[in-house]
Image (cartoon, rainbow, N blue to C red; front, top):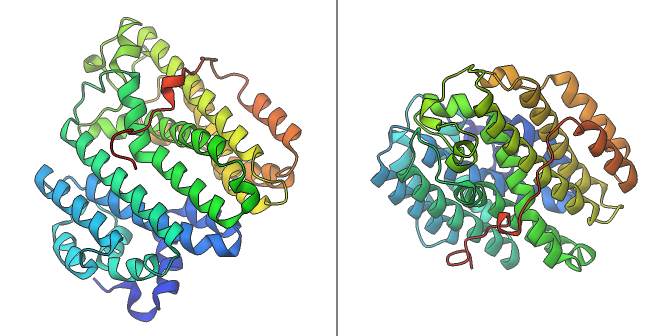
Length: 357
């Protein structure tokens, strides 16, 4: 395979590979202020490398744990990016997309950019990768079709996969702006909820794709109290007990996205780029939850995928009203009105209190 980086410098490679591994982030990152684009683009690629290690089924649990730990050290500067790439790249299977193969092969180019950031930025990225790599490896060891034990376990999984990313982004936003930094304690708490809302949306959308590879991230307790056992789950089933559990999770996800909107409203109105970055993610998540709610008996992810037209409408509307909080609140209320209402408890703001410092 010819490396995409052969004709690019590091910066050009980062911009190019972002388009290959995530169309969504390739769309949203350019909305950010110029001084944030480079570091947040790089942060996304670091998270994507971590995710690739966890997702490739060709790797054994031992290999996954060893390579995850090694990559954390690479980001911190205590291990060689070249050695990491040479170890991981030959092990990747055909299930990993070609762009991710290329990203792994060119980890050194990504890391050279990582190591050019200021100390606050580097600390935020290092902490995120360390917690994500450790947490995802732990959960992979317990992966099964039986689901997670309870909602608390789902909260913890969402923290490792997305909540910690919200914290990292908040650290970067606060480093960028003194005005944003003045809201840091509230933003940090809400950022975990923001991440959980987006990740719960992904989990619900990907129920059937995950099951095909032997995984289920749904909480057993929510379904058991509705009289349904997740081991009986089959694609396209119209079981009302399963759908009752699904409805409750839709409501929890909606509550987290309300927190995400509150988070966005604390970003100064003049920072329209950061607001757009947040609002586009919230809008697309709400549209996806609506799709799932309308088709609770869906049997594959493509059935609840939002249309490009819907994406364009979300982008246009949220961009137009990015600085007007009352309009955004009204839009959220209108677009989410058919979703169930479920109260979010304090323990939902779960963090890894032992390992995340």
